Amino acid sequence: DAKTTQPTSMDCAEGRAANLPCNHSTISGNEYVYWYRQIHSQGPQYIIHGLKNNETNEMASLIITEDRKSSTLILPHATLRDTAVYYCIAKNNNAGNMLTFGGGTRLMVKP
Amino acid sequence: KAGVTQTPRYLIKTRGQQVTLSCSPISGHRSVSWYQQTPGQGLQFLFEYFSETQRNKGNFPGRFSGRQFSNSRSEMNVSTLELGDSALYLCASSPGDGWSEAFFGQGTRLTVV
Image (cartoon, rainbow over all chains, first blue to last red; front, top):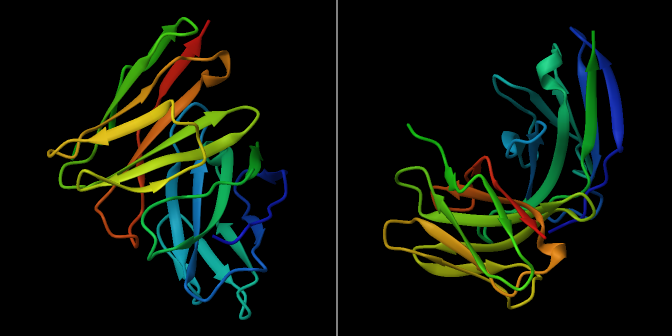
């Protein structure tokens, strides 16, 4: 799976949009971009995934650049409960369910 | 629908002992994966089982092993425990194909003394 690069930490004001970037410049054509988050002392939680089109669900939006070398996860109205470590993962969906986690971005939502 | 259940939640073992951790996936899910999380190495993939067969394996020594039963429940075993095996062990459950999201349990926190 392609390596992903994320900023180590970010801050966001409560109620504002949180935009978390991810670089995956070596992503291959059959690799999807997945986002998970881990709130302190809990197991990771799936957020969203996509291949090349932008995706939206009840939790977040995923914007993937046209060349697929980077993406942005958007939490439209961040709350204090969104404080967590966010992981961006490039995954080949034909190779089972193995997830390769990097260091992630520690998002701190502040009042 | 019940989530992924891992038992026990906390465990303290002595160096040199062995330990068995258990994971019950979501009903109907056929894939179970195991991960180790430490402050130094982060979240690392151990192995994945699908329909009782190991489908993927991470870069861990042979002291780490696992198995999956016909009801999809899975166990992982660590023999000859070392201090460095102290970690949060997480289990993830998926329906089976690679397209689906993984659902994680709360983990088992293992402390080796």
